[in-house]
Image (cartoon, rainbow over all chains, first blue to last red; front, side, top):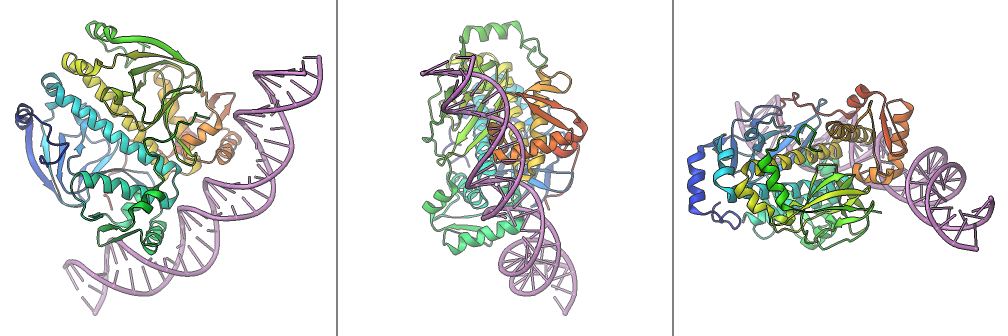
Length: 233
Length: 233
DNA sequence: CGTCCCCTTGAGCAGAATCAAGCCTAGTGG
DNA sequence: CCACTAGGCTTGATTCTGCTCAAGGGGACG
């Protein structure tokens, strides 16, 4: 992970600092829950390998997956801020992660301001993802949502060097996909079929192949950064 | 603003530090844009009075309002992180805001770790709001979304002491309400009518009156913190 | 071999979008 | 002072996207 651009900007002093706080290197099996909504979180985690997600469950069983967590994702900051998380975190695949000592954060802010700033940057990056998801859920049709999600995942995996020839593993069920997209699993399936029939994307055996990236972007209708200067009506 | 709980936890040294970086106290008229998507943001703002919002516009004119900004909200952190925002910010009402010097942040992290930590807390609080919105947009029916949004705004205004007897001003049009909810304005109107006819909420002349809070909470179906311990299927 | 989970497909329904028209208020200008 | 306009709100009629219910197929695993 350290090899990757974006993860390589640590000074050796910063790395030493982190190591003193590294409490444990753990792993968790697929489908296990790291913590529930309202639990006291007992540490700050960094995901090393595997997939996880943040999610919320409603009284009646509906579930919304808020965010996919990929290698490098920080998990459970609220624990260190003495808050209770309003969401749960579960491993999707088997995962390995690093657990940092809870008392890290105050010292980190005092002694390693550059690292602290990095933390804020990470939070802003996550906000960007959440904003995109809100646009997708609020304005997108089913097809647009699926396209936007695939692009979102593609781009994150690309930066992690986990894409080969427009293909990547996506170890989630269609049920989970539907919970990400705010769609019914049956309808999700139909949308996937249509995208397959039009030779744009196929999703099989936990892996996604993008055959027509340009068309996928067109469907997703993502507002690109340089876009609109429209007034607020 | 300083009087309010949550805003009163500053030491005088911290206040002095902030003041040295306070570049200007400005105001902007209703409907004006503070910055567009992709603009270089020239400072860090704190909203003092009035309402604003973060939003994105699609190629085809669809618009999603990401977040309402209320007094106390921090605006434009990415400017200080040398990033371009992926969203625009517009004033809804006339607003006044404080502009802080751009070079504040690195020094703040070096010299005022407690303040820096506060910044991270604020970011986490905003993430909580975004997570709720995602749940609302992804899983909620039109009625649930409206109820959840009213509760969300109610709770934020309550903390700002801007609620009286279950009533508060909400200076937005139904069009803008629809853009927040990811709904069609026509349908939004119909939902409002139904809630009015059932004596739950009325929205008139830019102000909202909640007549039956319990029922509103029931409709919103917000997953409460203490809730579910369900597995991820 | 049977069970369980996941994927797939069909039929029918419902919630929300779209299209279209009328109303009310505030602001503008003759 | 009044006609005119524009924006926002309200309502009806119709369409369609996505949901629900239901059933069958295939692979993995005990």
